[in-house]
Length: 328
Length: 312
Ligand SMILES: Nc1ncnc2c1ncn2[C@@H]1O[C@H](COP(=O)(O)OP(=O)(O)O)[C@@H](O)[C@H]1O
Ligand SMILES: [Mg+2]
Image (cartoon, rainbow over all chains, first blue to last red; front, side):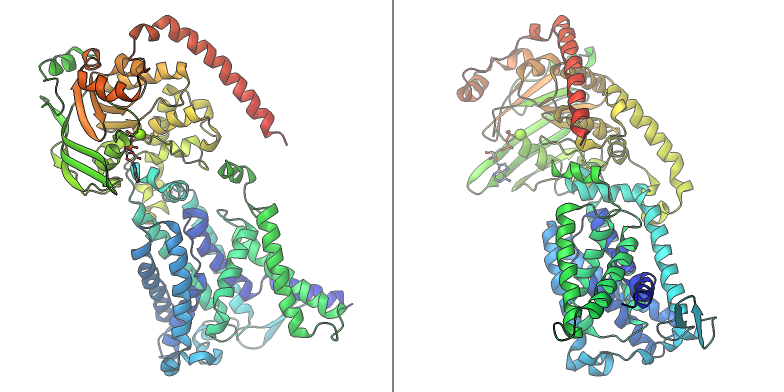
């Protein structure tokens, strides 16, 4: 078995752009669920909207800052549409509405009526919207090898995208860290524990929940941009499974912690890569074909999530003591 | 009871819905139906400023529902009410609280996975850091946070919870949670507190100190409206008693005489013939001291048990 190649692939996942994108998405979800207790089952919808907002406006000729702004504005509007009718109701209403709304975004995006704008089900080719981001790169053309890792400097799955992606992750972590320790974060935690108690103390619960929904959604939309920069915008690859993986990552790393989503994303993608590459080496293709191994990897993910929730519900970084109290 | 409040209530008629010389809360025709059942149907109710008013009545009389309505946690089928002259009907709960009328809940709402201190800080008002943008700039909110923390420590000390300040609220006993909830409500320095069964589940000796806190609050000018089942407590600290039965206000009067009101005997004792209508001697100082000693021992025991539990 070629362990060196396998380990290089696995280590490469630890800082891949996709890992950064999922970490960001999970940080957004952490603001919803970990801090505020909002059940958002449509984080992929925020990501897809961000991706569309960025790609479509870039293709229309907008400069990069404006395209990012469009992506952010899309997610803000989406959050308001989701939140206004549901945040006054019990938590489960938001869960149902977000699942449905994310699906609506995907289905509208892939509908043939919008072929000219979103490219319908075949989506938008990466080349059509990557230029502005690449043009910002100070790294120039060509590619660079750092140890066993060799990527292009600026184009597509590049060092440049890795730098920007992980800088954004770091920025989001600082933001969450700061907010978690602020009076604002304290109100959110109170809402997570008992809305009525917080209301009785004079806080406008609805407004706080809305702020959390919007903030987490905006981070989700930026995650969506990072996610599509090394590939294409394909609505069907950003559906319910994506939301499900973001949840897995958050629970794996530990909700309501600063670094949980980041660690969760790194471990998730690295382990998945390990399982897949090892199995490709050991399992003969007569037993499991390559795409079956891919699917088997996801089965392992599902089983892992179940085991996690049963045996370590606080995730890798969560506080066991804090969780134990909730059980009482 | 201070001489002033006593004097103010002296001339008040002892009938349900009687007018008060200086009412802080006035409610009119407040009704709430659940299906075909009328939970609350209060024609007129006035609460005198600066007094401790007890709201009593058998289980299911509608006391909690009335609290929920007055504080914006439930919507009435009809009715108006005003607090310090400002109409409050239809005003959301958070705004009611900000206007100075803060309530606690019959079923305690301690925020379990937050520490006792965090619970207390959440009760404070005018913390600029509760705004999202300003939260990002600690120098803006740190000074206020220090004031809040000092105030919280003082209150926790009074409620004998100071040594628990870094514990999760969920790890407190039921009685301690009641105390925490009351202390937390006081963080905003409310003009009026509405306590729904504040003594339920609280240790007898702590009850004694809780009663003195409530009296101290009144003496500092806060109006207190509280629901209580235990007639001893009611007789012990309230300046005025309002009695509810089957959703309606059936009697009002000073604690010493209201129990003999035929309407109360009828409504109240109709349901519980064996209820002891209270006797002040039960709460004599001597008894209270003994109880306190007992509780200290009990607390120690509970703590030891908790420590054992923590060990895996
Ligand atoms: N949400 C509700 N739905 C239906 N009935 C209710 C509800 N809340 C209270 N009730 C009923 O209203 C009546 C008054 O209840 P409550 O105000 O809790 O009484 P109290 O606090 O005086 O014991 C009771 O008969 C209770 O069953
Ligand atoms: Mg009640």
